[in-house]
Image (cartoon, rainbow, N blue to C red; front, side, top):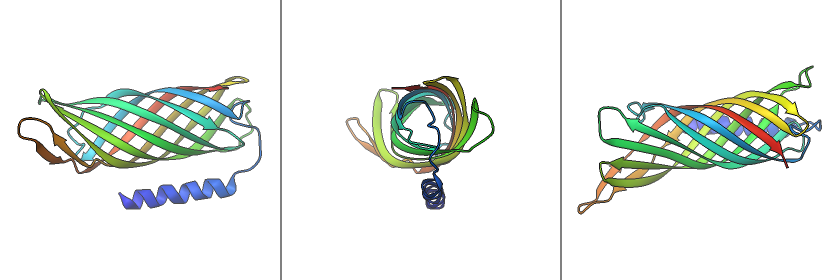
Amino acid sequence: MWRVVKHVIAAIALMTATALPAHAQTASPISLQLSGLWSIPFSGRLSNVSNGPGFEAQIRYNPSLFSLGIGGEISWHDVPTTNRSVRLSGLFIEPRYVLQTSSDKVAPYISGRVAISQTRLAVARRSGTATGFTANAGGGLIIVLGSSVNLDLGATIGAKGLGTATVDDTTPTVWDLGSGSNVILRVGLAIGL
């Protein structure tokens, strides 16, 4: 997982160092982005967790081709053939760099995302939460719909450290949730404020 974190940090540093002054990602320097997402957990302790729907919200500062988003995301999952469910959520920081093209309507971007994440595990009527760390990298397309509205199609892949959960009951059980990976697919609207 730390190898992924190092690559994400290196990508963030490169995007920051090469950000050029140019037209903003929306006509406004501040935008609100709301997205529906599809979370695909895999590998490690997430290999038996189903894909699940979710959503996210973020505020983005768009000074140029480089922008910075801060927000939160949540998704819901089941563990097939068991009575367990999993909720994955987190607070994240996402730097993004838009690649210049000849089009003024469509632009690809690259992004990195680091998050403090929470895993909520429910077993029958018992539940517990764990705090971990997530590092993702990816990209997408921005499609301009108007002077202050963009459609955002994005995807990221990365690693999740899930942490340790104490499942409450008359006899608490401690579960080391280990780590895993995920792919997140997003469709959202960025609205200039």
